[in-house]
Image (cartoon, rainbow, N blue to C red; front, side, top):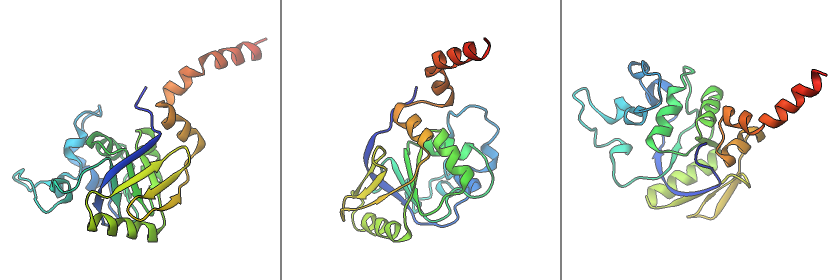
Length: 197
């Protein structure tokens, strides 16, 4: 069981870049591991650190002005290869939500499987969100999963977002696919008994 997702209110980390692919999210040289531990340390590794391992101060994750559990990214986030490690890195860093105007399908599904909620908003809402964060790094966003709304608390504007009903149920209840099956074990066994008669 994972932490249940209901309503999250948080400050945001802005990444106003388009077409961020999975190799930029987690470079290929870090894909040898088979467990999820430590991936957050290498999120956006080549943007966060130079070749000597020194922090690149200009990169947003190295800027103490910005923090929070919501990553606000430009259009077409998570394109490229299908590596699930990209979602592991986002979750491992501590992000619970990624907001963009478009996600690559495979990344979106990998994110949901790793308890990271990808929220698709209009380009106008995204631009306004970047503007609010730029004006006030402490600006907050509320993501309400039960009502499927995202609200920019600086402007009061909200938008609805879509999510698969099954994945919504899993997020709200802190269930991965195996947990979900285990919670329905009695029903599965009853059905198996019924069909075997």
